[in-house]
Length: 126
Image (cartoon, rainbow, N blue to C red; front, side, top):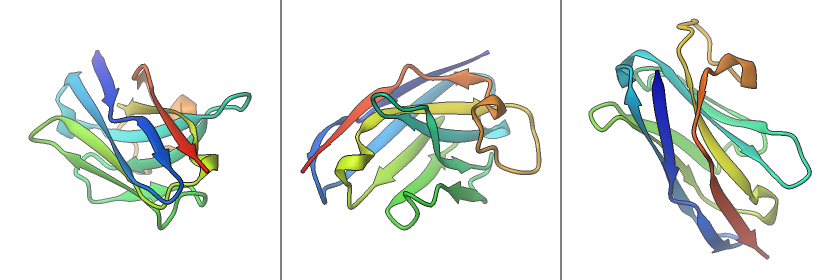
Protein backbone atom coordinates (compact mmCIF):
# COMPACT_ATOMS: atom_id res chain seq x y z
CA UNK A 1 0.00 0.00 0.00
CA UNK A 2 1.12 3.52 -0.80
CA UNK A 3 -0.45 6.75 0.40
CA UNK A 4 0.15 9.94 -1.58
CA UNK A 5 -0.60 13.51 -0.54
CA UNK A 6 -0.12 16.44 -2.91
CA UNK A 7 0.41 20.05 -1.89
CA UNK A 8 1.56 23.33 -3.37
CA UNK A 9 -1.28 24.17 -5.70
CA UNK A 10 -2.83 27.60 -5.89
CA UNK A 11 -3.63 30.62 -8.02
CA UNK A 12 -0.86 32.18 -10.10
CA UNK A 13 -0.69 34.64 -12.96
CA UNK A 14 0.37 33.57 -16.42
CA UNK A 15 4.14 33.45 -16.65
CA UNK A 16 4.49 32.63 -12.98
CA UNK A 17 5.78 29.53 -11.21
CA UNK A 18 4.58 26.96 -8.72
CA UNK A 19 6.17 23.91 -7.17
CA UNK A 20 3.98 20.95 -6.36
CA UNK A 21 5.00 18.35 -3.81
CA UNK A 22 3.77 14.82 -3.30
CA UNK A 23 4.60 13.08 -0.04
CA UNK A 24 4.53 9.29 -0.09
CA UNK A 25 4.20 6.76 2.71
CA UNK A 26 3.86 3.02 2.92
CA UNK A 27 6.11 1.05 0.58
CA UNK A 28 9.79 2.03 0.36
CA UNK A 29 9.72 5.16 -1.78
CA UNK A 30 13.04 4.54 -3.52
CA UNK A 31 11.78 1.34 -5.13
CA UNK A 32 9.15 2.71 -7.52
CA UNK A 33 8.64 5.27 -10.25
CA UNK A 34 6.38 8.28 -9.86
CA UNK A 35 4.28 10.32 -12.22
CA UNK A 36 2.25 13.50 -12.41
CA UNK A 37 -1.05 13.79 -14.26
CA UNK A 38 -3.57 16.59 -14.57
CA UNK A 39 -7.25 16.95 -15.33
CA UNK A 40 -8.78 20.16 -16.61
CA UNK A 41 -12.53 20.82 -16.34
CA UNK A 42 -14.45 18.83 -18.92
CA UNK A 43 -11.35 16.97 -20.09
CA UNK A 44 -9.82 13.59 -19.48
CA UNK A 45 -6.91 13.18 -17.15
CA UNK A 46 -3.62 13.48 -19.02
CA UNK A 47 0.00 12.57 -18.42
CA UNK A 48 2.38 15.37 -17.43
CA UNK A 49 5.69 13.86 -16.33
CA UNK A 50 7.28 10.75 -14.84
CA UNK A 51 10.49 9.96 -13.02
CA UNK A 52 12.31 6.70 -12.37
CA UNK A 53 12.87 5.21 -8.92
CA UNK A 54 16.31 6.77 -8.55
CA UNK A 55 15.65 10.00 -10.43
CA UNK A 56 17.98 8.96 -13.21
CA UNK A 57 15.33 9.01 -15.89
CA UNK A 58 12.41 11.32 -16.62
CA UNK A 59 9.87 11.90 -19.34
CA UNK A 60 7.55 14.78 -20.16
CA UNK A 61 4.46 15.48 -22.17
CA UNK A 62 5.21 17.71 -25.13
CA UNK A 63 2.90 20.37 -23.74
CA UNK A 64 5.09 20.94 -20.67
CA UNK A 65 8.56 20.07 -21.97
CA UNK A 66 11.02 22.85 -21.24
CA UNK A 67 8.70 24.48 -18.68
CA UNK A 68 8.12 21.77 -16.06
CA UNK A 69 10.70 19.74 -14.17
CA UNK A 70 10.01 16.58 -12.19
CA UNK A 71 12.38 15.59 -9.40
CA UNK A 72 12.42 13.45 -6.31
CA UNK A 73 14.11 13.31 -2.92
CA UNK A 74 14.12 9.72 -1.75
CA UNK A 75 15.38 10.73 1.67
CA UNK A 76 12.22 12.79 2.12
CA UNK A 77 9.86 10.37 0.33
CA UNK A 78 8.75 13.24 -1.87
CA UNK A 79 8.40 13.92 -5.57
CA UNK A 80 8.19 17.44 -6.94
CA UNK A 81 6.88 19.17 -10.02
CA UNK A 82 8.46 22.56 -10.66
CA UNK A 83 6.22 24.49 -13.04
CA UNK A 84 7.58 27.60 -14.74
CA UNK A 85 6.20 29.89 -17.43
CA UNK A 86 2.70 28.81 -16.53
CA UNK A 87 -0.10 29.30 -19.04
CA UNK A 88 -3.87 29.48 -18.53
CA UNK A 89 -4.13 26.11 -20.28
CA UNK A 90 -2.12 24.58 -17.44
CA UNK A 91 -5.13 25.12 -15.17
CA UNK A 92 -6.16 21.73 -13.82
CA UNK A 93 -6.23 19.46 -10.82
CA UNK A 94 -2.79 17.87 -10.58
CA UNK A 95 -2.36 14.32 -9.32
CA UNK A 96 0.71 12.36 -8.37
CA UNK A 97 0.76 8.62 -8.87
CA UNK A 98 2.96 5.67 -7.98
CA UNK A 99 4.03 2.95 -10.40
CA UNK A 100 4.97 -0.22 -8.54
CA UNK A 101 5.11 -2.45 -11.63
CA UNK A 102 8.89 -2.24 -11.79
CA UNK A 103 9.00 -1.99 -15.57
CA UNK A 104 12.08 -0.71 -17.36
CA UNK A 105 10.22 2.12 -19.07
CA UNK A 106 8.32 5.05 -17.57
CA UNK A 107 4.56 4.79 -17.79
CA UNK A 108 2.60 7.55 -19.49
CA UNK A 109 -0.87 5.98 -19.23
CA UNK A 110 -3.12 6.00 -16.18
CA UNK A 111 -3.28 2.20 -16.02
CA UNK A 112 0.47 2.16 -15.46
CA UNK A 113 -0.01 3.54 -11.95
CA UNK A 114 -1.54 1.75 -8.98
CA UNK A 115 -1.83 4.48 -6.38
CA UNK A 116 -3.06 8.05 -6.67
CA UNK A 117 -3.18 11.15 -4.53
CA UNK A 118 -6.28 13.24 -4.00
CA UNK A 119 -5.09 16.05 -6.27
CA UNK A 120 -4.24 19.71 -5.86
CA UNK A 121 -5.80 22.56 -7.82
CA UNK A 122 -3.62 24.78 -9.99
CA UNK A 123 -5.26 27.84 -11.51
CA UNK A 124 -3.40 30.11 -13.91
CA UNK A 125 -5.01 33.47 -14.62
CA UNK A 126 -4.41 35.39 -17.83
